[in-house]
Image (cartoon, rainbow, N blue to C red):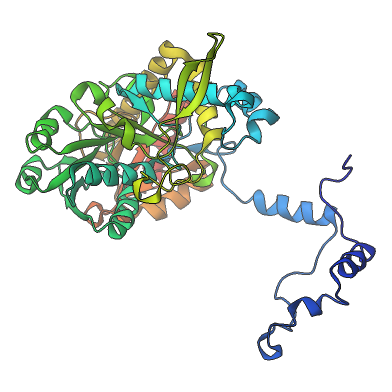
Length: 449
């Protein structure tokens, strides 16, 4: 039985191992490397400390972070501060889940397989789609994989993506597209939404897919019913990136004709964690299920008629010829997918809807409070839990002052949209109280003086 949290290395251990492999010293292991290129100086790092001293230093450094326990956050832009039921951490900390990898052997992996199957089922219910996979790395890579699926399915090499799609997701898409020789054309925005006239001008029979975000990066609700016929008239695919929590109240993209729905499950049971790791979801219509990247878990019965779960429709390069593979995803976010499953289960259908409604109500309360305080709102159309407020000073400067007051301010939109100088994207989730919102509005006003 191992008595240490790590394996110690004594001089006796080193000597014994060197004797076993037949060399006299550590230097002998590097004898093939020319002496003139070997590194012979001391490393430019601090000298080793005792365990207690090291823990103190690391704790001191960690305390410098502006975490969500000590600060009230109004920062969103893709990663949000949501309620996480206590049971989530309890379940995912169990060793059978915490250490689980790919459940290749169903006879000993039924718990893991069932959890993934339930994740797939709940994602389908939220999105209104037929089939969902067992998760992707994150929302950005899920979106890029969707575009590549569309290009392969339609045998077309052009993809249209709205400028209101998350900037980082668009960057990931361009990286994927370059390797597959797919042309990515960005459609401009107008009044906080995809410019429909510009979209119409670019759509033709060479376009594989149109990609929009719902709600979009500005928090606005895109008119999917107007966009859907434009791409389907030329037999292309409609790809929708969506915050899954918003689908607790918004019409599911699947009900409006989306072919692929992707996004990040972070709002359900997954902490912000300084930006990751999170969990992408990927859902499609039945006609595309054999082209879904990653893994799928299916439900079946054994020889005794008992319900069981197995990996199915395995189209990864590890299972079939590489030229037939749909993706090269070697791992998924099973632990985070489990966290999302536990959170959705704990909340239930009514809980998810209530949580989404609270996001809408509190965001609208904050927006109206800011208006009453003299602030201008950039786009005043329907939105979920985010909106853009115009400031009189640089967002970075104001955020520094807000941090001193105990607030993590909103996202500086001008970082990606230069025309929106001094504009802040504010996120208001169900965790924000009326007192916190009122205090934030007051401090934001004070920062202008």
